[in-house]
Length: 549
Ligand SMILES: [Zn+2]
Image: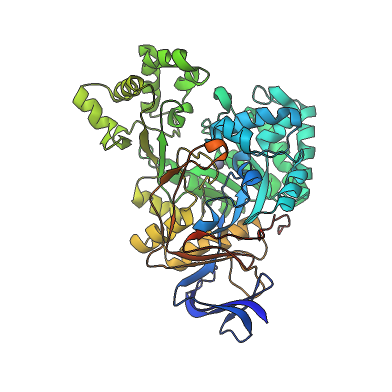
Protein backbone atom coordinates (compact mmCIF):
# COMPACT_ATOMS: atom_id res chain seq x y z
CA UNK A 1 0.00 0.00 0.00
CA UNK A 2 1.22 3.46 -0.90
CA UNK A 3 0.56 6.67 1.00
CA UNK A 4 -1.84 9.00 -0.73
CA UNK A 5 -3.66 9.51 -4.01
CA UNK A 6 -5.24 12.81 -5.04
CA UNK A 7 -7.89 11.97 -7.63
CA UNK A 8 -9.74 14.03 -10.18
CA UNK A 9 -7.46 17.09 -10.10
CA UNK A 10 -6.62 19.63 -12.76
CA UNK A 11 -2.91 18.88 -12.95
CA UNK A 12 -0.45 21.69 -13.65
CA UNK A 13 2.96 20.16 -14.18
CA UNK A 14 5.00 23.28 -13.31
CA UNK A 15 6.85 23.01 -16.62
CA UNK A 16 4.28 25.08 -18.50
CA UNK A 17 2.40 22.14 -20.01
CA UNK A 18 -1.34 22.49 -20.63
CA UNK A 19 -3.45 21.55 -17.58
CA UNK A 20 -5.03 18.10 -17.70
CA UNK A 21 -7.47 16.09 -15.58
CA UNK A 22 -5.98 13.20 -13.67
CA UNK A 23 -4.74 11.64 -10.44
CA UNK A 24 -1.47 11.93 -8.58
CA UNK A 25 -0.17 9.15 -6.35
CA UNK A 26 2.39 9.64 -3.60
CA UNK A 27 4.68 7.12 -1.96
CA UNK A 28 7.47 7.80 0.53
CA UNK A 29 7.31 11.55 -0.02
CA UNK A 30 7.68 11.31 -3.78
CA UNK A 31 5.34 11.26 -6.76
CA UNK A 32 4.74 7.62 -7.69
CA UNK A 33 2.35 8.02 -10.59
CA UNK A 34 0.55 10.76 -12.43
CA UNK A 35 -2.40 10.61 -14.81
CA UNK A 36 -4.58 7.57 -14.11
CA UNK A 37 -3.65 6.10 -10.71
CA UNK A 38 -3.40 2.31 -10.78
CA UNK A 39 -1.67 1.51 -7.49
CA UNK A 40 -3.30 0.99 -4.08
CA UNK A 41 -3.25 3.79 -1.53
CA UNK A 42 -4.02 4.10 2.17
CA UNK A 43 -5.57 7.54 1.75
CA UNK A 44 -7.61 9.11 -1.04
CA UNK A 45 -8.39 12.78 -1.53
CA UNK A 46 -11.00 13.68 -4.14
CA UNK A 47 -9.88 16.98 -5.59
CA UNK A 48 -13.24 17.49 -7.28
CA UNK A 49 -11.60 19.28 -10.20
CA UNK A 50 -9.50 21.68 -8.12
CA UNK A 51 -6.06 22.55 -9.48
CA UNK A 52 -2.96 20.72 -8.26
CA UNK A 53 0.46 22.26 -8.85
CA UNK A 54 3.96 21.86 -7.45
CA UNK A 55 4.43 23.86 -4.23
CA UNK A 56 5.63 27.43 -4.66
CA UNK A 57 9.36 28.08 -4.40
CA UNK A 58 9.83 31.46 -2.72
CA UNK A 59 13.29 32.49 -3.83
CA UNK A 60 13.51 35.76 -1.85
CA UNK A 61 12.90 35.34 1.86
CA UNK A 62 14.53 36.45 5.09
CA UNK A 63 13.48 33.68 7.47
CA UNK A 64 17.03 33.16 8.79
CA UNK A 65 16.36 34.41 12.32
CA UNK A 66 12.67 33.49 12.47
CA UNK A 67 13.34 29.83 11.63
CA UNK A 68 15.30 29.44 14.86
CA UNK A 69 12.14 30.09 16.91
CA UNK A 70 9.47 29.31 14.32
CA UNK A 71 10.30 26.20 12.28
CA UNK A 72 6.93 26.64 10.52
CA UNK A 73 8.17 29.80 8.77
CA UNK A 74 4.74 31.28 9.33
CA UNK A 75 2.83 32.35 7.31
CA UNK A 76 4.46 30.97 4.12
CA UNK A 77 3.41 27.28 4.03
CA UNK A 78 -0.27 28.15 4.46
CA UNK A 79 0.16 30.45 1.45
CA UNK A 80 1.32 27.55 -0.74
CA UNK A 81 5.07 27.92 -0.30
CA UNK A 82 6.89 24.60 0.09
CA UNK A 83 10.48 25.78 -0.42
CA UNK A 84 11.98 29.02 0.88
CA UNK A 85 15.39 30.42 0.03
CA UNK A 86 16.79 32.38 2.96
CA UNK A 87 19.73 34.75 3.38
CA UNK A 88 18.79 37.03 0.48
CA UNK A 89 20.58 40.37 0.19
CA UNK A 90 23.31 38.76 2.32
CA UNK A 91 21.46 39.33 5.59
CA UNK A 92 22.11 36.07 7.39
CA UNK A 93 22.74 35.18 11.02
CA UNK A 94 25.66 32.87 10.19
CA UNK A 95 28.56 32.96 10.47
CA UNK A 96 28.47 34.72 13.82
CA UNK A 97 30.81 34.61 16.81
CA UNK A 98 29.07 34.64 20.19
CA UNK A 99 30.55 38.09 20.84
CA UNK A 100 28.98 39.50 17.63
CA UNK A 101 25.41 38.33 18.17
CA UNK A 102 24.21 41.69 19.40
CA UNK A 103 25.88 43.37 16.40
CA UNK A 104 24.22 41.02 13.90
CA UNK A 105 20.80 41.47 15.54
CA UNK A 106 21.19 45.24 15.52
CA UNK A 107 21.92 45.10 11.80
CA UNK A 108 18.82 43.00 11.20
CA UNK A 109 16.38 45.18 13.14
CA UNK A 110 16.26 47.83 10.48
CA UNK A 111 16.27 45.67 7.38
CA UNK A 112 14.00 42.96 8.79
CA UNK A 113 11.54 45.37 10.37
CA UNK A 114 11.74 43.47 13.64
CA UNK A 115 12.33 45.12 16.96
CA UNK A 116 15.64 44.36 18.65
CA UNK A 117 13.64 42.97 21.59
CA UNK A 118 11.93 40.48 19.26
CA UNK A 119 15.24 39.27 17.88
CA UNK A 120 16.80 39.08 21.33
CA UNK A 121 13.85 37.17 22.74
CA UNK A 122 13.48 34.88 19.75
CA UNK A 123 16.78 34.06 18.09
CA UNK A 124 18.37 30.80 19.19
CA UNK A 125 22.11 30.74 18.65
CA UNK A 126 23.22 27.12 18.55
CA UNK A 127 25.88 27.68 15.87
CA UNK A 128 28.81 29.77 14.82
CA UNK A 129 29.66 28.84 11.20
CA UNK A 130 27.46 28.54 8.12
CA UNK A 131 27.60 24.70 8.07
CA UNK A 132 26.75 24.65 11.79
CA UNK A 133 23.72 26.84 11.12
CA UNK A 134 22.43 24.41 8.48
CA UNK A 135 23.15 21.50 10.84
CA UNK A 136 21.14 23.21 13.56
CA UNK A 137 18.15 23.77 11.28
CA UNK A 138 18.35 20.11 10.29
CA UNK A 139 18.37 18.96 13.92
CA UNK A 140 15.54 21.25 14.88
CA UNK A 141 13.44 20.52 11.78
CA UNK A 142 11.62 22.80 9.36
CA UNK A 143 8.05 22.66 8.06
CA UNK A 144 9.04 23.57 4.51
CA UNK A 145 12.21 22.98 2.52
CA UNK A 146 14.86 25.58 3.17
CA UNK A 147 17.95 26.54 1.21
CA UNK A 148 20.27 29.32 2.33
CA UNK A 149 22.77 31.73 0.88
CA UNK A 150 26.12 32.58 2.42
CA UNK A 151 25.44 36.19 3.41
CA UNK A 152 28.03 38.83 2.64
CA UNK A 153 27.22 41.15 5.54
CA UNK A 154 27.63 38.39 8.11
CA UNK A 155 30.83 37.12 6.50
CA UNK A 156 32.21 40.64 6.61
CA UNK A 157 31.24 41.10 10.26
CA UNK A 158 32.83 37.75 11.10
CA UNK A 159 36.14 38.78 9.55
CA UNK A 160 36.21 42.52 10.23
CA UNK A 161 34.15 42.92 13.42
CA UNK A 162 33.14 46.51 14.21
CA UNK A 163 34.98 47.73 11.10
CA UNK A 164 32.70 45.78 8.74
CA UNK A 165 30.25 48.66 8.11
CA UNK A 166 33.02 51.27 8.07
CA UNK A 167 35.68 50.56 5.45
CA UNK A 168 36.97 48.56 2.51
CA UNK A 169 38.60 45.23 3.35
CA UNK A 170 42.34 44.52 3.12
CA UNK A 171 43.63 41.75 0.86
CA UNK A 172 44.15 39.56 3.93
CA UNK A 173 40.57 40.11 5.06
CA UNK A 174 39.22 39.32 1.60
CA UNK A 175 41.24 36.09 1.63
CA UNK A 176 39.61 35.11 4.94
CA UNK A 177 36.16 35.95 3.58
CA UNK A 178 36.82 33.78 0.53
CA UNK A 179 37.53 30.80 2.75
CA UNK A 180 34.19 31.25 4.52
CA UNK A 181 32.20 31.70 1.31
CA UNK A 182 33.83 28.69 -0.32
CA UNK A 183 33.36 26.58 2.81
CA UNK A 184 29.71 27.63 3.05
CA UNK A 185 28.94 26.81 -0.57
CA UNK A 186 30.72 23.45 -0.30
CA UNK A 187 28.74 22.69 2.88
CA UNK A 188 25.44 23.24 1.13
CA UNK A 189 24.71 26.93 0.66
CA UNK A 190 22.73 27.71 -2.49
CA UNK A 191 25.02 30.58 -3.40
CA UNK A 192 26.35 33.91 -2.25
CA UNK A 193 24.17 36.97 -1.58
CA UNK A 194 24.95 40.62 -1.07
CA UNK A 195 23.46 44.10 -1.17
CA UNK A 196 24.83 47.37 -2.45
CA UNK A 197 21.49 49.13 -1.94
CA UNK A 198 21.35 52.46 -0.15
CA UNK A 199 18.04 51.39 1.42
CA UNK A 200 19.82 48.75 3.46
CA UNK A 201 20.89 50.19 6.79
CA UNK A 202 21.53 48.61 10.14
CA UNK A 203 20.70 49.90 13.59
CA UNK A 204 21.09 53.67 13.94
CA UNK A 205 21.51 54.12 10.19
CA UNK A 206 24.92 52.44 9.89
CA UNK A 207 25.14 50.94 6.37
CA UNK A 208 24.86 47.17 6.06
CA UNK A 209 28.47 45.90 5.91
CA UNK A 210 28.28 44.61 2.33
CA UNK A 211 27.73 48.16 1.11
CA UNK A 212 31.35 48.93 2.02
CA UNK A 213 32.76 46.27 -0.28
CA UNK A 214 34.66 47.48 -3.32
CA UNK A 215 34.50 45.83 -6.73
CA UNK A 216 37.66 43.80 -6.08
CA UNK A 217 36.04 42.23 -3.00
CA UNK A 218 32.88 41.39 -4.95
CA UNK A 219 34.92 39.84 -7.76
CA UNK A 220 36.94 37.80 -5.28
CA UNK A 221 33.95 36.48 -3.33
CA UNK A 222 31.84 35.64 -6.38
CA UNK A 223 34.95 33.87 -7.69
CA UNK A 224 34.30 31.28 -4.97
CA UNK A 225 31.22 30.15 -6.89
CA UNK A 226 33.36 29.52 -9.98
CA UNK A 227 35.83 27.64 -7.82
CA UNK A 228 33.13 25.49 -6.25
CA UNK A 229 31.42 25.02 -9.62
CA UNK A 230 28.03 25.69 -8.09
CA UNK A 231 25.84 28.33 -6.53
CA UNK A 232 23.96 31.43 -7.57
CA UNK A 233 25.07 35.01 -6.98
CA UNK A 234 22.20 37.25 -5.88
CA UNK A 235 22.46 40.89 -5.13
CA UNK A 236 20.17 43.73 -4.29
CA UNK A 237 21.61 46.45 -6.40
CA UNK A 238 22.28 50.02 -5.42
CA UNK A 239 22.16 52.66 -8.14
CA UNK A 240 25.97 52.77 -8.41
CA UNK A 241 26.24 49.04 -9.28
CA UNK A 242 26.01 48.68 -13.05
CA UNK A 243 24.64 45.81 -15.11
CA UNK A 244 27.90 45.70 -17.16
CA UNK A 245 29.84 45.12 -13.92
CA UNK A 246 27.46 42.33 -12.97
CA UNK A 247 27.81 40.86 -16.43
CA UNK A 248 31.58 40.75 -15.90
CA UNK A 249 30.95 38.78 -12.72
CA UNK A 250 28.55 36.47 -14.53
CA UNK A 251 31.12 35.90 -17.27
CA UNK A 252 34.06 35.38 -14.90
CA UNK A 253 32.20 33.04 -12.55
CA UNK A 254 30.07 31.26 -15.13
CA UNK A 255 27.32 31.23 -12.51
CA UNK A 256 23.75 32.57 -12.62
CA UNK A 257 23.40 36.15 -11.35
CA UNK A 258 20.13 37.40 -9.88
CA UNK A 259 19.73 41.15 -9.94
CA UNK A 260 17.25 42.55 -7.41
CA UNK A 261 15.14 44.53 -7.02
CA UNK A 262 13.56 45.61 -10.30
CA UNK A 263 10.45 47.49 -9.25
CA UNK A 264 8.53 49.78 -11.54
CA UNK A 265 8.81 53.43 -10.71
CA UNK A 266 6.36 56.00 -12.10
CA UNK A 267 8.94 58.76 -11.94
CA UNK A 268 11.50 56.91 -14.07
CA UNK A 269 9.18 54.50 -15.86
CA UNK A 270 11.89 53.20 -18.21
CA UNK A 271 14.45 52.32 -15.51
CA UNK A 272 13.33 48.75 -14.77
CA UNK A 273 12.84 47.99 -18.47
CA UNK A 274 16.29 49.34 -19.32
CA UNK A 275 17.77 46.96 -16.77
CA UNK A 276 15.75 44.01 -18.05
CA UNK A 277 16.93 44.87 -21.56
CA UNK A 278 20.56 45.08 -20.47
CA UNK A 279 20.18 41.72 -18.74
CA UNK A 280 18.63 40.28 -21.90
CA UNK A 281 21.54 41.58 -23.96
CA UNK A 282 23.99 39.96 -21.53
CA UNK A 283 22.10 36.68 -21.85
CA UNK A 284 22.34 36.93 -25.61
CA UNK A 285 26.11 36.95 -25.06
CA UNK A 286 25.86 33.70 -23.14
CA UNK A 287 25.40 34.84 -19.53
CA UNK A 288 22.80 33.50 -17.13
CA UNK A 289 21.32 36.63 -15.57
CA UNK A 290 17.83 37.37 -14.26
CA UNK A 291 16.09 40.48 -13.05
CA UNK A 292 14.16 39.82 -9.84
CA UNK A 293 10.71 41.37 -10.24
CA UNK A 294 7.67 41.46 -7.99
CA UNK A 295 4.04 40.75 -8.78
CA UNK A 296 2.93 42.81 -5.77
CA UNK A 297 2.57 46.57 -5.51
CA UNK A 298 5.13 47.70 -2.95
CA UNK A 299 3.19 49.28 -0.10
CA UNK A 300 4.49 50.09 3.32
CA UNK A 301 2.65 50.92 6.52
CA UNK A 302 4.78 53.02 8.82
CA UNK A 303 4.99 55.75 11.43
CA UNK A 304 7.60 58.47 11.67
CA UNK A 305 9.14 56.51 14.58
CA UNK A 306 10.74 54.29 11.94
CA UNK A 307 10.04 55.66 8.44
CA UNK A 308 11.76 53.04 6.24
CA UNK A 309 10.48 54.88 3.16
CA UNK A 310 12.77 57.83 3.93
CA UNK A 311 15.66 56.06 5.61
CA UNK A 312 17.52 55.37 2.36
CA UNK A 313 17.69 59.07 1.50
CA UNK A 314 20.99 60.86 1.92
CA UNK A 315 19.12 63.86 3.30
CA UNK A 316 17.51 61.67 5.98
CA UNK A 317 20.87 60.45 7.26
CA UNK A 318 21.20 62.98 10.08
CA UNK A 319 17.88 61.66 11.49
CA UNK A 320 18.93 58.01 11.63
CA UNK A 321 21.01 58.13 14.78
CA UNK A 322 18.74 60.51 16.68
CA UNK A 323 16.12 59.57 19.25
CA UNK A 324 13.38 61.34 21.19
CA UNK A 325 13.49 65.10 21.53
CA UNK A 326 16.57 65.52 19.30
CA UNK A 327 14.90 63.54 16.49
CA UNK A 328 11.66 65.53 16.75
CA UNK A 329 13.64 68.78 16.73
CA UNK A 330 15.37 67.79 13.52
CA UNK A 331 12.02 66.91 11.88
CA UNK A 332 10.90 70.48 12.62
CA UNK A 333 13.96 72.09 10.99
CA UNK A 334 13.31 73.98 7.76
CA UNK A 335 16.74 73.24 6.32
CA UNK A 336 16.35 69.48 6.94
CA UNK A 337 12.95 69.43 5.25
CA UNK A 338 14.32 71.43 2.34
CA UNK A 339 17.07 68.86 1.72
CA UNK A 340 14.64 65.93 1.92
CA UNK A 341 12.24 67.68 -0.44
CA UNK A 342 15.03 68.33 -2.91
CA UNK A 343 16.16 64.72 -2.90
CA UNK A 344 12.74 63.08 -3.36
CA UNK A 345 11.98 65.27 -6.36
CA UNK A 346 15.46 65.11 -7.95
CA UNK A 347 15.02 63.37 -11.31
CA UNK A 348 18.69 62.36 -11.41
CA UNK A 349 18.72 60.64 -8.00
CA UNK A 350 18.21 57.16 -9.46
CA UNK A 351 16.16 54.43 -7.79
CA UNK A 352 14.33 55.57 -4.70
CA UNK A 353 11.68 53.89 -2.64
CA UNK A 354 9.62 57.05 -2.38
CA UNK A 355 9.42 59.44 -5.30
CA UNK A 356 7.26 62.26 -4.06
CA UNK A 357 3.97 60.61 -5.06
CA UNK A 358 2.02 62.22 -2.24
CA UNK A 359 -1.29 61.17 -3.75
CA UNK A 360 -0.27 57.59 -2.93
CA UNK A 361 0.57 58.21 0.74
CA UNK A 362 -2.51 57.61 2.85
CA UNK A 363 -3.38 58.62 6.36
CA UNK A 364 -6.67 56.94 7.25
CA UNK A 365 -8.94 57.60 4.23
CA UNK A 366 -7.26 60.68 2.81
CA UNK A 367 -3.96 61.25 1.04
CA UNK A 368 -1.14 63.55 2.03
CA UNK A 369 -1.64 65.38 -1.29
CA UNK A 370 -5.25 66.23 -0.34
CA UNK A 371 -4.33 67.05 3.24
CA UNK A 372 -1.61 69.44 2.05
CA UNK A 373 -3.91 71.12 -0.45
CA UNK A 374 -6.60 71.67 2.20
CA UNK A 375 -4.06 73.09 4.63
CA UNK A 376 -2.31 75.20 2.00
CA UNK A 377 0.99 73.50 2.84
CA UNK A 378 3.73 71.63 1.08
CA UNK A 379 3.04 67.86 1.39
CA UNK A 380 6.23 66.99 3.29
CA UNK A 381 5.48 69.78 5.77
CA UNK A 382 1.87 68.59 6.09
CA UNK A 383 3.01 65.03 6.81
CA UNK A 384 5.72 65.90 9.32
CA UNK A 385 3.56 68.50 11.10
CA UNK A 386 0.73 66.00 11.44
CA UNK A 387 3.04 63.29 12.80
CA UNK A 388 4.74 65.71 15.21
CA UNK A 389 1.34 66.84 16.53
CA UNK A 390 0.49 63.20 17.33
CA UNK A 391 3.72 62.21 19.04
CA UNK A 392 4.89 60.53 15.78
CA UNK A 393 2.25 57.81 16.26
CA UNK A 394 0.32 58.68 13.06
CA UNK A 395 0.04 55.63 10.83
CA UNK A 396 0.79 56.22 7.18
CA UNK A 397 0.40 53.79 4.33
CA UNK A 398 2.37 54.46 1.15
CA UNK A 399 2.00 52.85 -2.25
CA UNK A 400 5.61 53.20 -3.30
CA UNK A 401 6.49 51.21 -6.39
CA UNK A 402 5.06 48.67 -8.83
CA UNK A 403 1.65 50.34 -8.91
CA UNK A 404 1.33 50.65 -12.72
CA UNK A 405 -0.35 47.38 -13.71
CA UNK A 406 0.29 47.71 -17.43
CA UNK A 407 4.03 48.13 -16.79
CA UNK A 408 4.24 45.45 -14.09
CA UNK A 409 2.37 43.05 -16.36
CA UNK A 410 5.01 43.56 -19.05
CA UNK A 411 7.78 42.97 -16.50
CA UNK A 412 6.16 39.74 -15.30
CA UNK A 413 6.04 38.40 -18.84
CA UNK A 414 9.64 39.33 -19.62
CA UNK A 415 11.73 36.19 -20.33
CA UNK A 416 14.64 37.68 -18.34
CA UNK A 417 12.52 38.21 -15.23
CA UNK A 418 12.36 36.02 -12.14
CA UNK A 419 9.15 36.35 -10.10
CA UNK A 420 10.59 37.12 -6.70
CA UNK A 421 10.93 39.71 -3.94
CA UNK A 422 8.32 38.53 -1.42
CA UNK A 423 10.82 39.52 1.30
CA UNK A 424 8.91 37.07 3.53
CA UNK A 425 10.30 37.18 7.05
CA UNK A 426 11.49 40.78 6.71
CA UNK A 427 9.98 44.26 6.96
CA UNK A 428 7.38 42.64 9.18
CA UNK A 429 5.65 45.78 10.35
CA UNK A 430 5.78 47.43 6.90
CA UNK A 431 4.19 44.84 4.60
CA UNK A 432 3.82 41.11 4.02
CA UNK A 433 4.05 39.68 0.51
CA UNK A 434 4.58 36.06 1.58
CA UNK A 435 1.36 35.36 -0.37
CA UNK A 436 2.88 36.61 -3.64
CA UNK A 437 2.25 33.29 -5.38
CA UNK A 438 -1.47 33.32 -4.58
CA UNK A 439 -1.56 36.95 -5.71
CA UNK A 440 0.04 35.99 -9.04
CA UNK A 441 -2.56 33.25 -9.57
CA UNK A 442 -5.53 35.33 -8.43
CA UNK A 443 -4.75 38.82 -9.63
CA UNK A 444 -2.53 38.43 -12.68
CA UNK A 445 -3.97 35.19 -14.04
CA UNK A 446 -7.66 35.18 -13.12
CA UNK A 447 -8.51 38.87 -12.84
CA UNK A 448 -6.20 40.42 -15.46
CA UNK A 449 -5.32 37.48 -17.72
CA UNK A 450 -1.73 38.74 -18.05
CA UNK A 451 -0.30 35.22 -17.75
CA UNK A 452 -1.86 31.85 -18.51
CA UNK A 453 -2.39 29.65 -15.48
CA UNK A 454 0.27 27.16 -16.60
CA UNK A 455 2.82 29.91 -17.28
CA UNK A 456 2.21 31.55 -13.89
CA UNK A 457 2.62 28.16 -12.22
CA UNK A 458 5.86 27.60 -14.13
CA UNK A 459 7.15 30.98 -12.95
CA UNK A 460 6.51 29.97 -9.33
CA UNK A 461 7.95 26.46 -9.54
CA UNK A 462 10.19 24.92 -12.22
CA UNK A 463 11.59 28.28 -13.31
CA UNK A 464 13.21 29.12 -9.96
CA UNK A 465 14.06 25.42 -9.42
CA UNK A 466 16.03 25.40 -12.70
CA UNK A 467 17.85 28.67 -12.00
CA UNK A 468 18.87 27.64 -8.49
CA UNK A 469 19.59 24.05 -9.49
CA UNK A 470 17.15 22.59 -6.97
CA UNK A 471 16.84 18.93 -7.91
CA UNK A 472 13.54 17.04 -7.97
CA UNK A 473 11.27 19.96 -7.13
CA UNK A 474 9.12 22.51 -8.90
CA UNK A 475 7.49 19.97 -11.24
CA UNK A 476 4.94 17.19 -11.15
CA UNK A 477 6.83 14.23 -12.53
CA UNK A 478 7.18 10.64 -11.53
CA UNK A 479 9.99 10.50 -8.95
CA UNK A 480 9.81 14.18 -8.00
CA UNK A 481 9.31 15.17 -4.38
CA UNK A 482 5.66 15.51 -3.40
CA UNK A 483 5.64 19.26 -2.71
CA UNK A 484 2.11 20.20 -3.72
CA UNK A 485 -0.46 22.96 -3.67
CA UNK A 486 -4.16 22.15 -4.18
CA UNK A 487 -6.21 25.26 -4.90
CA UNK A 488 -9.36 26.61 -6.47
CA UNK A 489 -8.42 28.66 -9.57
CA UNK A 490 -11.79 30.42 -9.40
CA UNK A 491 -11.09 31.79 -5.92
CA UNK A 492 -7.35 31.73 -5.26
CA UNK A 493 -6.01 34.98 -3.80
CA UNK A 494 -4.42 36.46 -0.75
CA UNK A 495 -6.79 38.06 1.72
CA UNK A 496 -6.58 41.59 3.15
CA UNK A 497 -3.65 42.38 5.41
CA UNK A 498 -4.11 42.06 9.15
CA UNK A 499 -1.93 43.21 12.01
CA UNK A 500 -1.14 40.44 14.52
CA UNK A 501 1.04 40.46 17.62
CA UNK A 502 2.52 36.99 17.63
CA UNK A 503 6.26 37.60 17.51
CA UNK A 504 8.47 36.67 20.47
CA UNK A 505 7.84 39.14 23.29
CA UNK A 506 4.57 40.25 21.66
CA UNK A 507 6.02 42.07 18.65
CA UNK A 508 3.62 43.00 15.83
CA UNK A 509 3.63 42.10 12.16
CA UNK A 510 1.35 42.15 9.13
CA UNK A 511 0.01 38.92 7.63
CA UNK A 512 -2.40 38.05 4.81
CA UNK A 513 -4.62 34.94 4.96
CA UNK A 514 -4.76 32.45 2.08
CA UNK A 515 -7.91 32.35 -0.06
CA UNK A 516 -8.89 29.32 -2.14
CA UNK A 517 -6.12 27.06 -0.80
CA UNK A 518 -7.32 23.51 -0.08
CA UNK A 519 -4.12 21.69 0.73
CA UNK A 520 -0.36 22.09 0.91
CA UNK A 521 1.98 19.10 1.10
CA UNK A 522 5.72 19.16 1.81
CA UNK A 523 7.53 15.94 0.91
CA UNK A 524 4.16 14.18 0.95
CA UNK A 525 3.07 15.48 4.37
CA UNK A 526 0.04 17.75 4.52
CA UNK A 527 1.04 20.94 6.34
CA UNK A 528 -1.94 23.19 5.52
CA UNK A 529 -5.57 22.84 4.47
CA UNK A 530 -8.47 25.21 3.82
CA UNK A 531 -8.28 26.40 7.43
CA UNK A 532 -4.59 27.30 7.29
CA UNK A 533 -1.68 25.53 8.98
CA UNK A 534 -2.45 22.09 10.41
CA UNK A 535 -0.97 20.65 13.54
CA UNK A 536 1.94 18.53 12.35
CA UNK A 537 3.77 16.11 14.61
CA UNK A 538 6.96 15.98 12.61
CA UNK A 539 8.59 18.65 10.50
CA UNK A 540 8.51 17.36 6.91
CA UNK A 541 10.79 19.97 5.32
CA UNK A 542 14.38 19.36 4.32
CA UNK A 543 17.37 21.63 4.54
CA UNK A 544 18.42 21.51 0.90
CA UNK A 545 22.19 21.22 0.56
CA UNK A 546 22.69 19.48 -2.78
CA UNK A 547 22.24 21.45 -5.96
CA UNK A 548 22.77 20.84 -9.65
CA UNK A 549 25.94 22.43 -10.92
ZN1 LIG B 1 15.63 41.14 0.69
